[in-house]
Length: 524
Image (cartoon, rainbow, N blue to C red; front, side):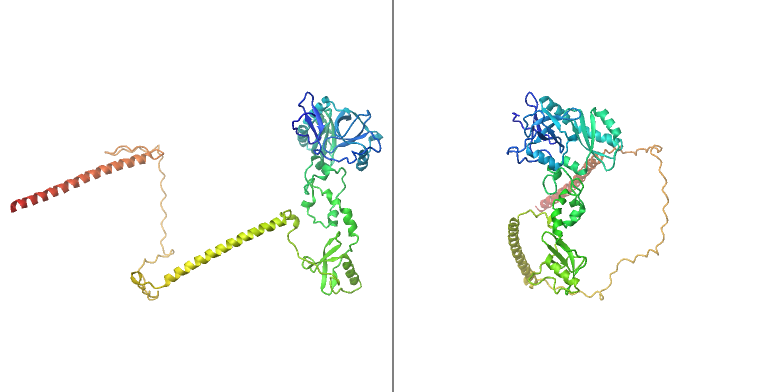
């Protein structure tokens, strides 16, 4: 593929399609498909020449085919292989000696001892038809789910895979019970015009086909390398001393995690050396009850209380066996811990380290941050103490100044001490209210007579000398107009009154002046 343009890979098949040139091309994309494997014998020459190749299809479906035409095939080639009916398109995923090892690991057995054939390398026409089939898968899955729900079938269609020539499709479904889907196949054939194959899978196979990230942060085992599934029980969790918490033990498939069985054999072998205890250990100090076991470390922890972990003491298996032998002989051990051994008392922890959100943080960085915070807090504490001391000193001075007797004008005479309340005369206040019992009961009000509707009322006659009022608007314009009129009337009245007062004052002043002028004339 000579195109430099970035294309989005097809996750289900693990390939990239390019239609930039005259003909459509396709190539394998490493790392974006399920059940990825590394051929660690690829660089070495083949010890046993073989014509069997592993070919992968959508998600986790793989099969083994024979190169009958002696084609020059290598890992990543897109080939057309035999199917019933027609042909299918797949990608070569494994060659050489690793094919036989993989077949032995998976347990593959060819049908009737014959392998299906590899016809040819895929041509542009095959790749174009293959791409069209891939584009129909999602729509077909949604429509098939709706049809199954309308027919009332207790099943879930998890995935649809079209064959490379668009003649057939495989419907993967999950069901807890046996489902009669004969009518469903007829409806599918009429709706999609293809040949139908129904394949039932379990919850773990569905999780592998969908893929995802596990609680460990890595890709799901069923999607990356696991092809065969073994049954997992809660006995595996008990054997490894894991708390029976369904939220932590269950995976994305809502079943018990497959990784619980990875170390089951190691723990089973380690538990053979640990004695079984049905009764507490008897010592002169008292009885000790078994709390927990660490099979890999070979230790057992005991407590003085049966229902708590107070005074938890950890002992090696050899010391536990010695105490058990003494108890069976009818004797009690002097101490729980033997001679030459240090007693290790574990304090109970009420917070699990797994649930801590800071368990991945660097402790050195945290200590530096804590030191800086402590220095800042100490500086702030010193400043606050100095401010408090200064404020307290000021307050003390003000209190002392207020307590000192003042001299001069500012000094106030001491108030006369009031007489005690007993010697005071009682103020004449209001008369005591009558008690509620003594009050006369109020007579009930007469009911109001209903008014006549406005339509039946007679219109009022306007009074003489008054102008009809203007209707008030919603915005209160009538009030504003009325206020302006009242203000103008008040101003006119004030002017008239002021003019009358001014005329009276002028007449008085003129009379005084005339009288004064007449007196001066008489004197002369």
